[in-house]
Image (cartoon, rainbow, N blue to C red; front, side):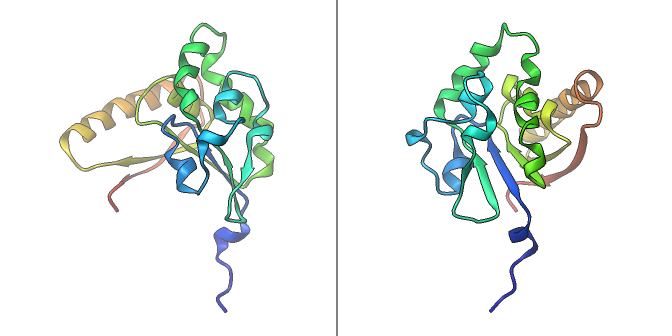
Length: 164
């Protein structure tokens, strides 16, 4: 019998902030049937802890996404401190996990800005092709602006080829 891996003993939370909900479905959860998701958390209807669910992996919990998250940016646009909503929401559950991984949409909108403001560090997946590398420059500029104005401790942990 194999000994458990290190990851199986570390409490982890996967936060899916992409309206396509691929991270949610990727861990075996059907987002269309959920009533409590990241959407309800971001618009302030529920606390983050109320939306967290267990996955089939004993070491991994999930704060799922839903297609409704598309509307969250529009609903938050006129709110004060709109770029800090995710950080405030996750603060109440941060101590329950050793790692919180935030999966972001592939765009630089308000939800991604919220994730950067909430994060300690960023891992950047990128395809090694011209347009992807051009977008990487824009992302690095955004990260620098977030560091300067919203989240000074934010670090870039690395950039990796997402085809690997």
